[in-house]
Length: 136
Image 1 (tube, rainbow, N blue to C red):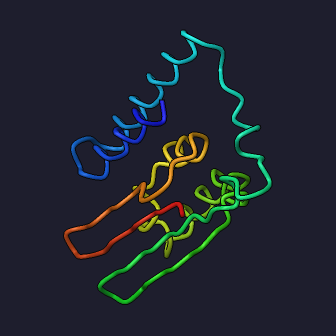
Image 2 (cartoon, helix red, strand yellow):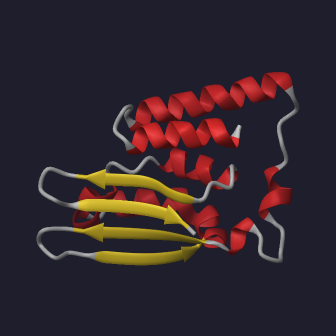
C-alpha cells in the first residue's frame, strides 16, 4: 500500500491531480486494504525507538517574493501529535493563512502513518511563492 500512496503523492506533486482527489484516492486505497485484511497497527511501526520513523524530521520550507521565508524542522513525533490543531490555528492567523490554505493535513497524516520519506508536498504559485514539505 505504501507504493500506491507514494504514486498518488507523486501525481499530486506533479499537479496531475489536486489534493482533494489525492485524499479520495488514499481513502479508497485504505478501504481496499481494510476489506482484504484487518487494519494494520501503525503504532508498532511508528513507536520503534532506535532509528525508527518517528526519529525523522518534517521539514517545511516557504519562500516568497516578499522575502517572507520560513524554514521549519519538526520531529515527526511532534508533528503526529499536533498536526491538525496547528493547521487550524495557522489558518486563522492572517499572516500565516495564505501559506497553509493549500496544505492538505489529511494527506500529511496519511504520509506519516504510511512512513513515507522524501518530498511529499511541493506548491509553486504564479508569483514564485513556494511551499515544500519533506520527511527526512
